[in-house]
Image (cartoon, rainbow, N blue to C red; front, side, top):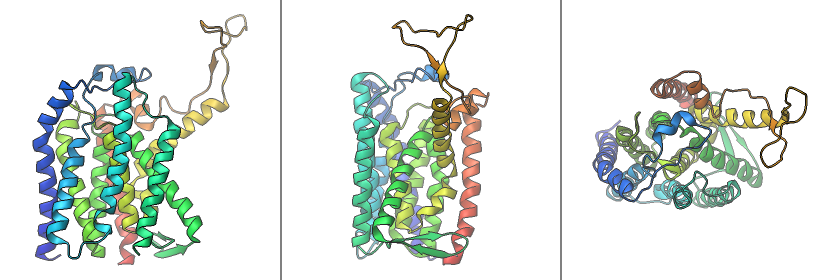
Amino acid sequence: MNTQLLLIIVGSLLASFLIAAIIGKPLIAYLHKMHFGQQILSYVPEHAGKQNTPTMGGFMFIISITVTVIAVNLIWVRPLSVQSFTVLALALCYGLIGFIDDSTKIRKKENAGLTSGQKFALQLVLALVFLSVLHMGGYLMPSFYIPFVNVSLGLPWLVYVVIAAFILVGCNNAVNLTDGIDGLAAGVTLPVSVFFLAVGVLSGNLPVVIFSAALAGGLIGFLIFNFNPAKVFMGDTGSLFLGGAVAGLAFACDMPLILVLVGLIYVAETLSDILQVSYYKMTKKPVLDDNGNPVRDANGTIRMEGKRIFKKAPLHHHFQVSGWGEKKIVFVFGGITILMCILAYFGILPRY
């Protein structure tokens, strides 16, 4: 690694960290002043004490990453390319969806913003635009690189787009699901950002290096305020931005399938939720009283109950109900992610 590249990495990371750390307190004070408090879901009573903790704190790292990426690219990258800002643009657009969702929740004073259909439609459109821009710029070919075996599987463009869009939208929602306890989404995404930083160095992809370093620095700065006990939550504004950033980096490095490894926690969180809901619906049946008659709610509706695989979903809630503290969950999940990132790094080494 040459001195200039090292300077870019350290400069990007430190600049993003310092901006996030400096604006943290005034941002939290502003969120308090505006009464932007998180409404806690009724089925998560263990989080009742966090009611009205300020949300949309994701602006802390969104601002720091955006300022850093733009400034460092303008200073160091010659010539500037579409790829220099494509991942940032994708992350910002997904963050905008999260902001609309958070704003709706705050206005309604409940934990229900955009409908799942509205979110999915917006996420899908953004995914298709992102893939098209990279493809037209010559940065994305319709093939999937397979780690460890060092081969690429070529596909017809239409088939590739369908699968790629599914990966983008799925990753975005998976990171959003992971943001359920203090410091978890940021703590898991931090080693993922370091992994893509290493890939950027290996491949000589300077825009990826800059974005990944800025992402890592911004997350470290944010964790000062978000680690348990959290003074602020990132909200959907932050988690959807992170989902876009992680997925965007994977495609910018032309290795989206690596997300299965580095994003194992994201995958586990999503699968636990899908399995829980599916199994509950499959096994749902009427609740009977001691005489074998169906139990009815106050409005006369027959009460239905199903079986569950986990004590509570997504996965972090299962461990929380099982007695794990939030800090333990963050350290264990973060540790697993570090190990998977190391494994993934050796899996992609033959490519370079």
